Length: 391
Image (tube, rainbow, N blue to C red; front, side):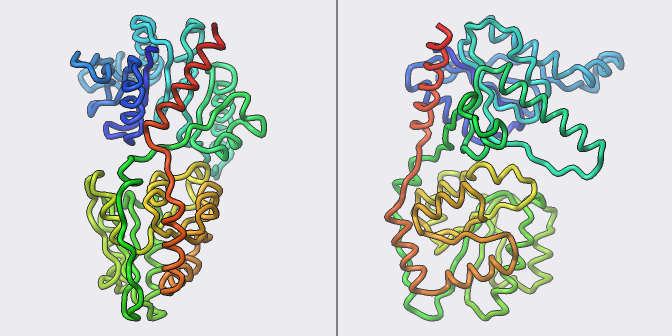
């Protein structure tokens, strides 16, 4: 098969499509991978091929453009961009197009009235759920939601989701008519890394917690810091490391100082992806925290939860459906509502030597995970089915 994997939301996107593209190429398919460049154009490269990528002009105007052209781009730039992408698809004989739209607009235009021999899959890696505070905002969101639903059900050939909770939120109870769940993959190193079980027999052993992810205001990490403050007031010995790129302009550092938590809460820089499994294994408990808003995170497991499960480390997780399934399957952790007190109580429970020993044993017995090669095979099976149905 000749396949195009297209995502357009960041010049440094989640590695999922790189991994899926590599897996499909290993299965013998011709795979084009389309990535946004730093200057917001699009590079399309044939995976495992030395041919230079093809560059498509992006949807945004440049300052050098005449005023009239900039005006056209501001209003119709995404449509012009999509028509350039449609031309590429037809010209290169692409049979399967898998789209993770990200910030793209007018995604309906990519598949509309294209040849029936080309199958289009809308890859819903996040289900957009937002609260509207004004009537105008609610109206705009209703129009976007209706357009998205029509696109998913009647313009694209199929939709894929990371979890059935997202599919049900988007498509309703009969979601299997239009969609398929293809799980999020993990690197195989998370399944092979050996973790030394910590010794908690000494009463002064501080329980160590790790959170890995972006240190941004949208993540609302205030809650974890407030939970840490409460835990310290209870006299529980612990250390909490928040590991990841900090784009909060010092906000969380100031919060840690304000609560006088410098001795037990540390903001640590991001680490290389290859070093993550070994780093996680240095801790007692991993924190799988997602904020209540935006609600997108309620409908699919985060990559870190799946990586924690594969490593066999106990975790405390925000109580949403995807997390609940993982915790209840392994008995290797705790589910909590997003209040500082509940998180503090859960962290205090983790400080109990008997609990941490049992949770660790359970988590180690239930080490499972879907690798990226497994995910590539899932997509291959779906693609073959869609092509057969057309034939």
